[in-house]
Length: 205
Image (spheres, helix red, strand yellow):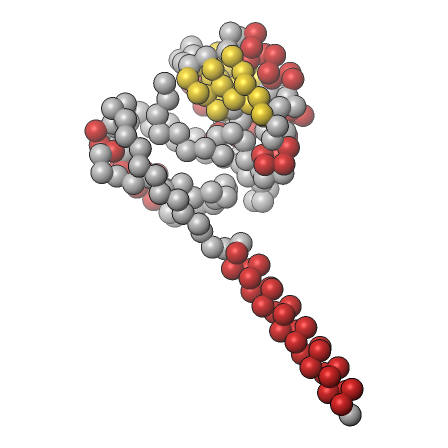
């Protein structure tokens, strides 16, 4: 009898531990950790004075507001700071689980140069860029899948790219842009998020 009681307690305690561990994992994947930093720069627009900028990660493919409400809110927040808004509808791509957003298909690396993945780019937007005199540097399918179209501009003519994309790296360098690379198979590719997803630029040099 005592042995059966001990066995019963063992399985009960094990079940409790499993439930508690499951709750821990569930909560840990849905909680948000925040860090606060004070940034001072004369290069920031006057409208940013006293504002706090919050970056919420892992929200690719999610909706901000309903319908065009998010666009309206963004325009209201940046009123007086932005001269022109270009609303670019994104394709379905590989499905709802795909982390597809605007910076998946275009990354400016200079004032007149951008790395693009034209396969997912709306025709009107691509033609708009060409009409504006922007040199489009095409990323191929294989390197697009490895985040090769997601580059972070540090300043005009200088950018950061995930290592492992030799074709787009050469094309960008041939266009006169300096390219820095980092080993990002774990933090970026498996993440999934390129250097623009890992940062929240406030201003550039």
